[in-house]
Image (cartoon, rainbow, N blue to C red; front, side, top):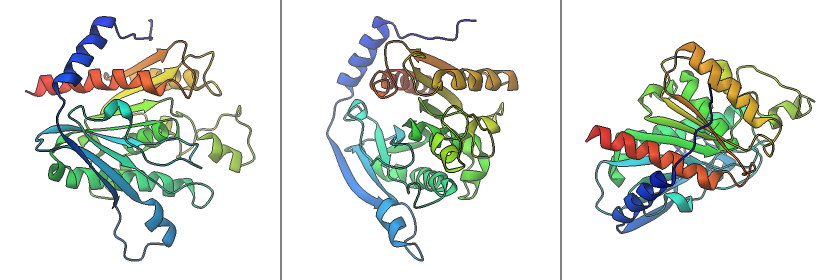
Length: 274
């Protein structure tokens, strides 16, 4: 089976037209805490913040929670240009970073931010049943972890299956390379334990869309580990797992065109719910 998928020019034209028709006034609220400040460390108060970009007067809008990349050791929240002013609520999240915290804290911050979004998105015109979680690189890894390991969101009283869809842009399927490095391992030494998204393969997960750059241009076999992830999800009985390879794009450049795939899925789901 050919597991590559490609967006046609007609699809891209449709998406462009959809975005133009969705233009309206948007506002952004910055640096909203998503954790209770009581008892939190100064570092948590500094990093556990999010921005919300939303259409003024919107109602029932799709929402995208966006996790930035940076190897779990760097990076900052931002509203992706591809998601601005197109009728979405966009929640951009900061989370605590290695080595100041353990990897479980990074994952827990991501789960707390999604739980905050589910509970608060209606204030910004978002629909609680149309919340999508996405991220690039480290952000894609966090997306897969909180969407597949149900314990992460259950801690906050949220069923991970209430997420409308997961979009991992060149995220790890195996243990994150910086986690492996801390164990003295090399980037080419694979490891799968309870910090690996693929450890939590299950048939009842939300829509799961994996996007990779060109396999010859990606980091450390990122395409191949995600192809294996795709296969295991399929064998487990998960029918809505999709894998896209963006030929000609490296690890850093692949995020921009990957947003077209996200928008196509969101538009299809929104149309189907109307």
